[in-house]
Image (cartoon, rainbow, N blue to C red):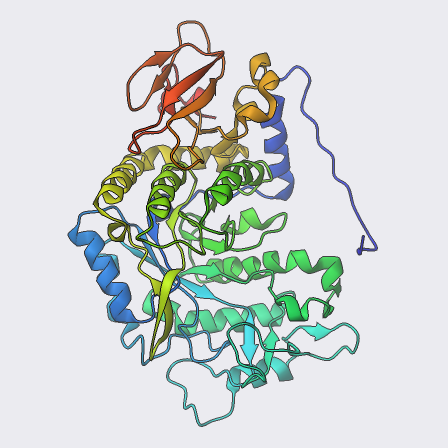
Length: 502
């Protein structure tokens, strides 16, 4: 253990409570901060990839979604849209007219999310209109005013010793990390976001590398923060960055129900800043998919209510591979019942232009006609569920009970459930109505599902066959048709029943 001080906080449920597990979730949220109500745009489908290199690429994708009349609420501009790390601005050669871009996207009801990274190169400037022949304004200002992370051994603001993966060795510019524990850093960097993104209407931020990642070659460097070393308090770094964006947006008059950011790392208390998380750069495999169904449930009961994966996984997989196509269909069926519904990935082969590298297309129409039919069906179903998603996220805001619920959280007194043990860790409830059992094996034809006990006369109704089942039993469900999977709805619970939705 690295930290010199460790506090324990313990909470328990009342023995006589109807559901002590939900009570504990609420008490944890009371202590660490309740998430805001999820903004309406965030409940829809998000299109993202590594990476849209320029304005034309991004707009062509958005227009194609609209031409095909497919649901889309958010599109994401990934990293390296800048000239230098620390510019915090769009490269004007590749993104010539951000204002017009945002205006057209807003006319299509599409929100822009943009990636920001915590690194500051010694060549970084201040904004897209800055004269590149002048001094490195952002870096020099941040260095002179002590806004960069220090080496704990020397006390000096220290660059990375070796170039990260995106740079050659030796690096063309020294790479530093901003220090968001410093309130001056938070104020300065948010001002860059305001001047260089928000003035065009971009107000939703993706905090990538929010550990901040220092890569294998730098793992032994111990960075000194204001209150300790990286090993002692480094995990709180992401929360300080989330605080920077949240407090900046609030100061600009933005309401909580319109503040949203996505962060690759998380720390206790981050939820109250309007931050969501995703599970990082996971491989595109059925094994990884199997793990994510379990990860999501653990994340939910840890107080992180806005969560997703990269649908299809991030790395590996070819759009022409039948295994990848089936994986994507099955992953969409899971993703539609996650709080955030987001497609992402870095597919082979890559191409390189004057605006940098990009993986192969990931948009849903590139995986073949059969996969397209299956995927768009579940996309449209999720679109129909958006009022339900909003309602369950409002419950999370008010009570601390997540939308994505392990079965024990909804059925704490079901003895059959406890007897099943790990056999049911691949199923979960999405809100109070839907039981979801994603199919996480390739070429599966049958899938076993435990249906928890229900009150008398209540049934579990299979979404695709309308077959009604009694609770308290294990059933075998035919999943040979990729258009279907084990999805059940309780017959005794309605979205409008405010007493049951919580």
